[in-house]
Image (cartoon, rainbow, N blue to C red):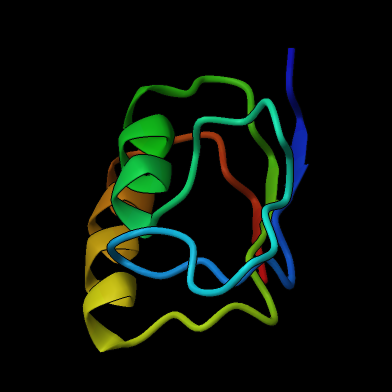
Length: 77
């Protein structure tokens, strides 16, 4: 079970990766919308770190709705 996910400083945006760097070559998560979908269905994640990304108001509106529905997340940066 995944309990902590660190996606800090990966140039994430609403529409996808902004710039050259990707946090994982194998990962399919690239945007706040994909993270939100994951948060809505995840039952084990306790901590999520998105610090240092280029997230805007729309991104946080999307993520806020998902976090509201998530019942397991305890920490968010």
